[in-house]
Length: 440
Ligand SMILES: CC(=O)N[C@H]1[C@@H](OP(=O)(O)OP(=O)(O)OC[C@H]2O[C@@H](n3ccc(=O)[nH]c3=O)[C@H](O)[C@@H]2O)O[C@H](CO)[C@@H](O)[C@@H]1O
Ligand SMILES: C=C(OP(=O)(O)O)C(=O)O
Image: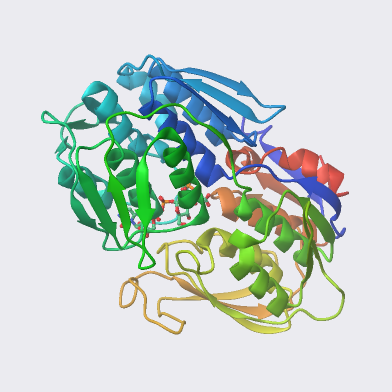
């Protein structure tokens, strides 16, 4: 898009009030689409949001010869993976830079074709985001990984993939999904300990089980996968996007608003809802969704640490920080998942927020980033009035935070690079209009 057109002009200072609908989870839907590659047949995914990541994964699948039909209006994606081929690497490269999903094609492509090329990955720039756990997992399952190939990382398995005992040094969401997607068709049993168990991962397990896989999970976050010989297509309805729901909840708090998020569900949000309540926000869970509102009066400061599930999600952190600039006192956020996720606070400070970053672990436990040179703790002092200004969107959640800040601020703001938000927030312009925001 022309950078001059990729701007949202916001007149802030109006509470966001009204009802919006949130569909399926960005961090599940893309993985379920990759899972469809494992079966030579048709899969149907429902409650799919109209976000750019869905189009990126659809196009990647199409480059591999897979038929994909996206019915955006009804949120239904139909995938027929009867035919799969290696894609032209140059084509894949142009798409892959916008998403982290191509690495997850490894196992399914090796099963279907005997080899896979993994191009450069994209995704939010919030840390180094290495893929060493992914590659080590694939090696343990019997793959040969050639990182020097001119067309990207080349993965082969001359003797097929076989079960293995794998331990993740950190409960990585992507590496857990990598193992599941590769082990379901591997010969024999795989034990994956130290795994992540995010609700989006458990929904992927549901999809794989529908397809014919045998997967169990122990209380100590160990998955046991018994490889099967073949899988068939699935029909599945995605769980709701709990990151989008929490983002709108934070927007309600920051703007003194009242937002009913249709489709939001409580189970994956329990930790967020506890924090929302401690900050002073009100919510009401109903059968149709969750209503979030600012009840008036002071908001309260909190000390939180981001963590893997069931901890406070790192992706909830950025939008909530904007609301914390309006809380009465000192809040602390210790980011333990990504080493570099506070870059978005600089424009907030320029808008009037008081936020100080620290290299120390300002939490109950030292994290992996202790004694390393990363500013991964934030102290936020509030309440501070925010004033509108020009902002450049740095990443998906940071960008949504800037949007919330612009809506909460007095005066106008120009938010540049706004289309980045389309990667994870379906029709956010339509939703802003439904909530009475003043923008063009
Ligand atoms: C598309 C998707 O689902 N994205 C989500 C996924 O990202 P993603 O799956 O990329 O995140 P991970 O859970 O893998 O990353 C967590 C941490 O592990 C590290 N790590 C990861 C893999 C690896 O091979 N080596 C390694 O060191 C990362 O640098 C990071 O510090 O989970 C994150 C944590 O909930 C979310 O913020 C992202 O929104
Ligand atoms: C970090 C995120 O996504 P991705 O892994 O796709 O970059 C996110 O959704 O906040």
